[in-house]
Image (tube, rainbow, N blue to C red; front, side):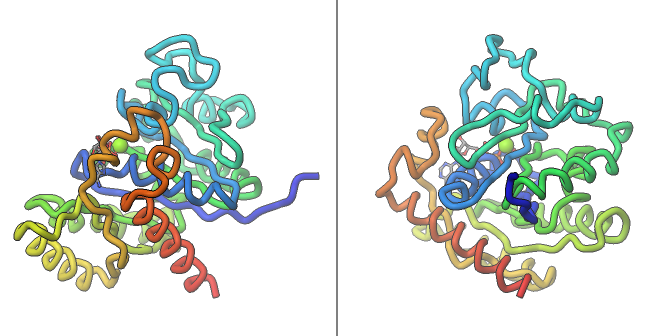
Length: 267
Ligand SMILES: Nc1ncnc2c1ncn2[C@@H]1O[C@H](COP(=O)(O)OP(=O)(O)OP(=O)(O)O)[C@@H](O)[C@H]1O
Ligand SMILES: [Mg+2]
């Protein structure tokens, strides 16, 4: 009989596009899956979503570059058996992939159905990581309604630190309705470059916002890196693409911080 687990559900969120959410989930999931069982759930469905990062245009046995023949979370909402939807990526790492149909998630797709699905998955996986699009649509409501922890991600630019304040409205709304146990785990700084003045200024601004929200930044910052642009085109995590690089080391350190913050909260 399969060992029963008590999976932790996480998401990385930002309402401004292109901050590196999918790339971060890809690499953190890859690191966690070295030792633990991990499921990624793709609730995005854009062309360059995490399903594409992992597989390119050919998800699992799919023959269609548009992935129209791929089973997604929509099939779970229609009552499909999870084992017919989940696609293995590699040892210890599986995904519920997405295609453009997933962009049509609406309030008819019930929070309860999604919670029931996640609760089943918690028994099979140690970590469940959910990737969402940037725009705050129903996929954000579903995702935040089932997550234990949310990690906002920012870039050191003029817009993204402030966008966390908008995000916090959504988090508070969910905390007061469908998921009172939702917590911030920490803020991820991505595409950092300490040589620029804007990066220093925006780091300070992010720290000020973090204080207001009573959350701290992770100590590890992910620096701007050409390797982190390239690796998604090879459909390999940074650990496979450039295992000895500074970027791989940063993702290892960030993942270890995530593991230890979760352990502290659960002590
Ligand atoms: N630290 C980094 N340095 C350089 N490029 C990065 C870094 N992190 C991510 N990228 C690149 O930034 C681009 C956007 O990343 P990604 O798709 O992960 O963002 P996203 O937040 O998921 O976007 P969307 O809002 O469209 O879902 C990708 O080309 C990715 O390779
Ligand atoms: Mg994305």
